[in-house]
Image 1 (cartoon, helix red, strand yellow):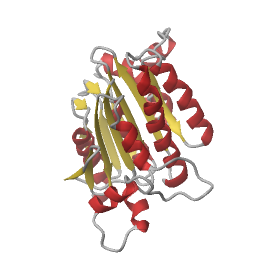
Image 2: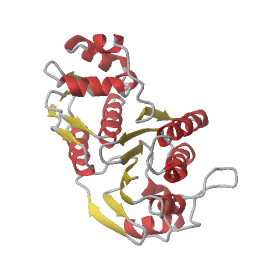
Image 3: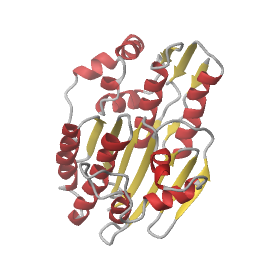
Image 4: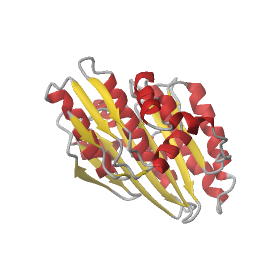
Length: 288
């Protein structure tokens, strides 16, 4: 089965279509899957970590043999993915296919510009030490923002969700952050391959509660599934930090269960997804 990645992996809709194509291999009993990277022209942080999780999920499916086509891959895309450590996190048998088909090896030998004030490379979230590393790098990025008062809010958002992955997801995840100085925007993507926020939060609600009602309850102040030994202030704090007075404007979308959810300070709207796949995916676009 052959899958041609789209030109753009930027929005939640782009990612949903990609995941639909990749994950449907499981339902058609495919034994070989070929993922073609040659069409890619742009990836957002959300697109990058979603692609990484999808490829890992496919690799973990025993009957499937995953191959990539990258012989005509866009050089800027290849260089960008190398810079944010995408290839370092791939299983070695997949990474070797990029070595064979591209100049990835040469790119790895080049000197890197210091982008630490604009970029948090793809960072795994598996244990507490990962969260401490993320915190340090976030404050480094925030040091150059025109409005430094947003720094604590951005850190709170990222660390709350990272701790959620460790404490609640029954899986692992990734975070990727990029600051775009041309329009003073920070994009935060954080996702995991666990049981999903909707499934985790369902235990707090009566049977037959809708996914929208589950999310509305999860993002209320004071609502939490934490035990006394676990960290954080809950998703209500994430919502407050995303839409407070220091941050000029935030677009927050998450994917969990069978739906997308668009969040504001006042409400949550729901949009159906093309396909169910594990985990919880957050995409923040924050004007600073």
